[in-house]
Image (cartoon, rainbow, N blue to C red; front, side):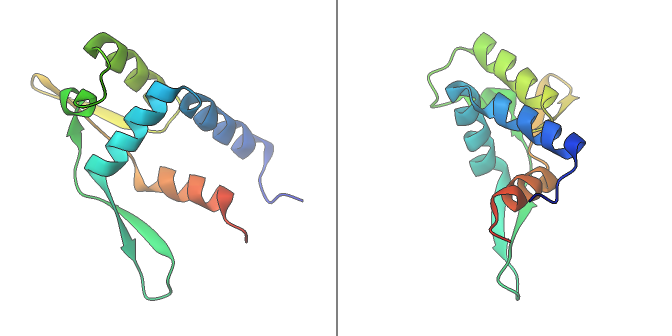
Amino acid sequence: MSNYRDDQILELAEKFKALSNPNRLRIFMRLLSLCCIPVSTDDLEEEIETKGCACVGDVGKFLDIVPSTISHHIKELRRAGLIRMERRGQRIECWIEPETIKTMGAFFSLE
């Protein structure tokens, strides 16, 4: 059946629930493109490395979403454990933890 414990399933459900909103999914995908790069390893498994973080203002560019809505959705993504945030002066930077991508990717793997 499944190698996942109930607490792991609940955690994944919260992540997927957060991503079920189209705007949050767009924001998450934007963060992926701004902050993460896939890296192939010798054993052909794909790894994810961070290339930095993005300012909350940069995340909203080209998404046609007002800043207050971006802020709300980013807080929901953080609450679900999909992203991390840190204030640096007047900037609020956010990024996706590589472990989050690995966990979600492993869920969909055929192994």
